[in-house]
Length: 167
Image (cartoon, rainbow, N blue to C red; front, side, top):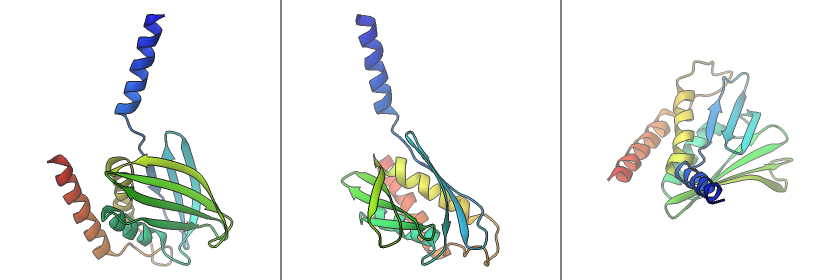
């Protein structure tokens, strides 16, 4: 009996050490549509988003800048008409990442996922996927590249956050 309890305790501890990280993959855009994959320990989401009314990759870049400055923000991934909303809510040292879905931009939202994460588990994976996306080759007809100035600003913020966390 004692052995069982010890194993159980060990399992709980290992869960605490390894926080749930999200994985975001931005695919190759085509004619204003972008394939998105989001994975975490208990969620797998795949959808194709439109660049109308706002370009969501630019919005993601802006949202990460805001979140790093402790400002609550959201990104709308429009599937015309359905939408996914990614909300970033900084709280203390952490960041809450909430996904909700609606039948349209102004329709009622239903929350489908929440992660109480932090810089490493939420911001960094999103930042890395944006950086990777910015290196892809595609035509302006397919998708507009992320504003380089915004991306540079985000990179500076991420670097300074990494340094301050290391101290």
